[in-house]
Image 1 (cartoon, rainbow, N blue to C red):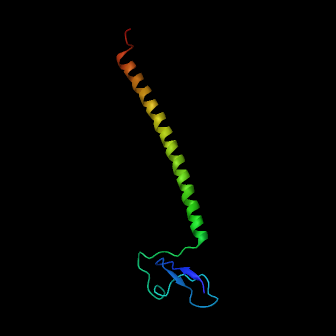
Image 2 (cartoon, rainbow, N blue to C red):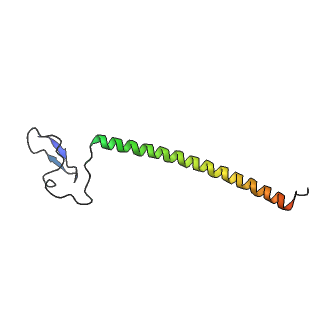
Length: 96
């Protein structure tokens, strides 16, 4: 017999028969319909892939955010310069 964890309720249980391995559900959850909020059964490879994809997305989001800040800064500098030039054209040079 081997100790396992139920993938639906998270409870601990003994696998029911000799030679059994990697059972997913305890006796209470087995045979019951999963609730709509029931836990999804994922294997380790799926979890690792999902964590990797999330990490990549976070990295891309950080890069995008940095680039957006750079573009915003460049845009604000250009806007200030254009505003200053427009004032100079409209009112002429300032007397010293």
